[in-house]
Length: 540
Ligand code: VG1
Ligand code: CO
Image (cartoon, rainbow, N blue to C red; front, top):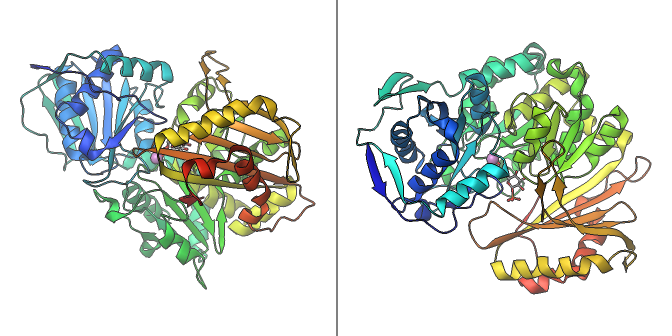
């Protein structure tokens, strides 16, 4: 065993979902090692425990895995289970932690951020419940990175990750496991695979875009089990640079899928996942399902899926996610919790059995089967519901709006904004909040305005500064917050929502329907002038 002296790096504070930095930062000597040692020092159960390890295959994944294996052995871990070729999706790791009662999991991914030598790298730590470590643990890890003086490692040859099987490093056992088998079996246990196969046998055409990220092998295995044709999958081979793309499933970065779905005679069903496989988008022929609507549709129809046939205990959504889900909860007479952005905030509610399904506007949805969002799960939910209802995506969505009304919704992202300017916008809006109620902007009158804070109903921990929201008397609202996953400057997110009752016009253009709220947000904050941008970088 080697004890290696080191000194702290500034800025190793995990954001919304782990530590994310450019590859150039991560590959500095001791950078990864310091953070990994801080995890071992902060989570004593990892010593003598089982650890699940894998990543989304991006550049540096393979090297980081060898480094972490050596450090795990030197820190006294009993066993590490690693995905073959270092590949494991975020939902697969969550499932494996739970199955093997592991002490935790280490996920190497910067999720939707671009990869490659000039892209980003990231590391997330998940706890024994399979979910992202709670803030109390990430705070501890961060504190440790700030006073670290040494880390432990071994002098040993790299482990061959290309074949499943057993080996060892010093007294630590290593098992290279099939990346997809357990995940696929879990999906078979949740859904009616025969009914979904029936859709493909009856000629339903599919286009699944894996964006050269981790979901490719999972989708290949699952759609083969379901009998979908092989050409249904595009960009299915994981590549270290995601083929030069940006593995964020939105209309801008998944343009190939959108083009196919909106082409004449396009496929009946389309979907895509992000870098680490925890997000999803769903499209029908000529129609894109807004992620907020998608969660609401899944909740409203969950009883048609074997795993949820006995009903749902409760629902939850992140604060900026549209309130379409709340309408479903109301009808089902079950609670709907509103949490801060980031999956870690759903963990306690899921563990306590308060909720069965939850989701975020950023294309994340999942259930109590694991403790992460789960891209392919959402896709299979849709297919199972389509099979049970014998209806298309478009028909299901129209029916939903006719029952619950429609929440027109969009997120405008202003990326790589100068950090100080983005902060100025937030400070300015925050200082205006108390005086906003009753003020009129265009046709909208402000009902309330606040800085969202959350008290966890289970452990009573309080998370402040989770986004600024301005709610109008019409029920419309906008929310502003700064992203916690970017690596260049600041990303300002503007979330926009307007409710149209079932009796109203349900087929408006989304941006046009939201134009009044968009101008109100600018009139109140003057943010476009402050950040010197005339239009968003991405509209989703
Ligand atoms: C974004 C999303 C958030 C999601 C997070 C991690 O965070 O908005 O909903 O939980 O990414 O997802 P932020 O702070 O940039 O808004 V993933 O798939 O990147 O692990
Ligand atoms: Co992700």
